[in-house]
Length: 251
Ligand SMILES: Nc1ncnc2c1ncn2[C@@H]1O[C@H](COP(=O)(O)OP(=O)(O)OP(=O)(O)O)[C@@H](O)[C@H]1O
Image (cartoon, rainbow, N blue to C red; front, side, top):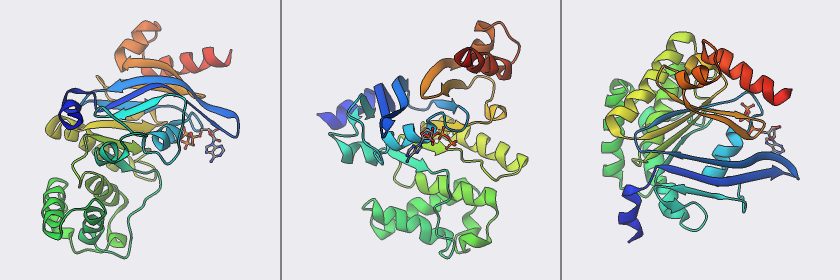
């Protein structure tokens, strides 16, 4: 059965995926796979196509050129099963600032068909994990930027997805909060086995050992551990490797 089959499949599979806005190509023949529990950085400058890729994975946009599967489920033909396995933290904050932390999470649970009791017990567990259990009745507008981002991640995990997409989640955060959030996402992978795809244009968010996908002008220029990329290109740092890759593209 399809449900059983999904467990053995990668959390995300993208095959030969292309997309254009009004005939302007934005993604070109992307192919990649992410295993359960893997943390992967999608690194690329503004306009590289990161948000567009997320939009295709979540089906905000549709493409007939290529295929996207979540846990083995095709996002076009098996949309319900695929969507149940994706959590998303969008670039722009989407919590309701006038609702409490718990209300925001409960609402998300209801949208995913959870009973009130189930949603509230999931919310409690998520808030305990991010150290915000005591703020459950606090209105979101009273939280710091870093706390809000953590609540967004907690909300994205309410329905226990196997893949979490984070689109530039540290925008607007100070250095310490950014570092905390990166650490938090790594913990999720290690402790809960969630696959994380972390989109950013900030090289300093890549940690040693992270797998990095370099996306530039809609094409994947590299895919591998940060160290391997710099070694392969004969340079000392990921920053230099990135400049070299993008420079060659522009030459
Ligand atoms: N709705 C749209 N209509 C037309 N072009 C678009 C649209 N959205 C994005 N683009 C273009 O597609 C390209 C990729 O944009 P995208 O937002 O996916 O990049 P990104 O890597 O997420 O960058 P950013 O970090 O700035 O969001 C850019 O050239 C952008 O101008």
